Image (tube, rainbow, N blue to C red):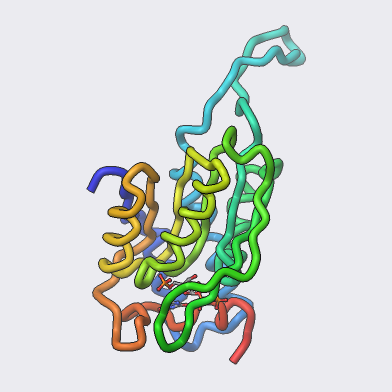
Length: 209
Ligand code: PRP
Ligand code: URA
């Protein structure tokens, strides 16, 4: 699939296996989510635009590349996407952070929006949407729809674990965005949970339930 990167890096695979373990506690789970987001972000941000700027070294003045243009926007899908933000901020501390609040209805599995705030001007920024789980794809499609309605154009989507159904749905709805997936899992179960997955990412990050 064009515009889809599925990671095979051993560090990412190892950390995802630790996330899956039901005995991994909240503290370690949070750190792992952040570390994986940073490793994935290193690859996802490889096309950030650069411009040469003048810098004085102790030896001489030179022209040297720095990141150009409006600052990166990180847009987590609440709640679980929040867990990935600090990993990307570790790479790009000056990034702006927007928020999209969506929750899945437990019966229909359809996403419902409850909060949205994006950095302005959104149309001139590279936007990285974060959500550890891409299950049916309903939340991912709704978040990208919303960002596009507000003018966002250069969008990347990062999820740590995806189901084939969700990846297909997001890619078909938004073939122009690049989707980064840490691991592609087997399928969804009857409750639209990813198998083998890691359970409820939001609950495991925030220690709820
Ligand atoms: C989870 C997850 C995604 C969504 C994925 O959020 O963090 O946002 O489900 O499912 P989908 O691809 O089928 O839409 P949830 O709705 O449980 O909210 P939470 O993060 O607040 O727990
Ligand atoms: N949301 C989660 O947190 N986990 C899943 O497996 C599916 C949706």
